[in-house]
Image (cartoon, rainbow, N blue to C red; front, side, top):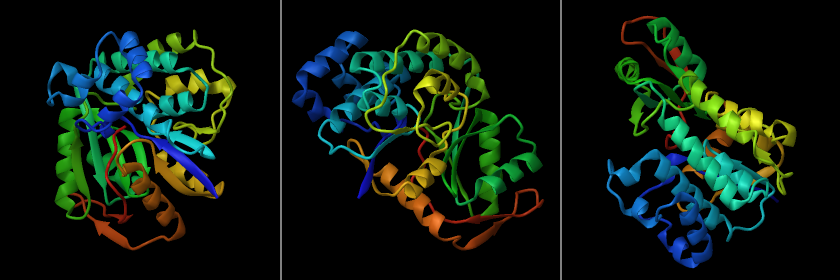
Length: 309
């Protein structure tokens, strides 16, 4: 039986979940805190909006928690990480050591936080990406990009906040699909991250990557990473969409029958179930009309909880 171990992105950090791992692995915790220059536990206990909940603290903390959680997991056949979780997967595969991976996660978060566009992300559930992009084109939302292709009927968009709110109103007015603004401080995986990607590429050029012990699926290609393209794809990852649904289809076709999530939570296994179920059946077709009474669009209604990455 082939299995996959998956690492979640930013949205997976919830409260004090995983704090016991910091006590169980004190040496690695101390190493991480030395790299970051601050303690990890306050990030887990901080209220939303606190300085401790800044992206440059949350993402490195999630990396540490999920990396420690994976130390207890059985060896999988494949590794995959959603958005930032891809770096955790590469660390677990032995491509980069723990402190190097943590520095990359921290640098990546700082570069993303410097995005000058006051934007965010919007999760749309209950409509396929083709139908969604058709509505965006018809309604004139040219400044919004596809950020995450999480499941056949679950897509996350990124762009300026005002445009996302306006599109959400159009989608909700249709009465079938759901549109939820995500608690994301920046328009990740969109054209607005081009400068961050360029800066990250410069950092990645200084890192030596080793061959993975276990194949790691790339979010950009939805295929196993090749060592010679790792830096290139990790930089592109900042402005290209997370092809999670395609990655799940690849794993299924490769013979994977079970996907487990490192750490607490069941978000990624639910997306796995949604993607593989959709692959096996076309499902019911639903029609949704835009707010302005223009062209209808159809969708297979399935899916789990949105993940921004």
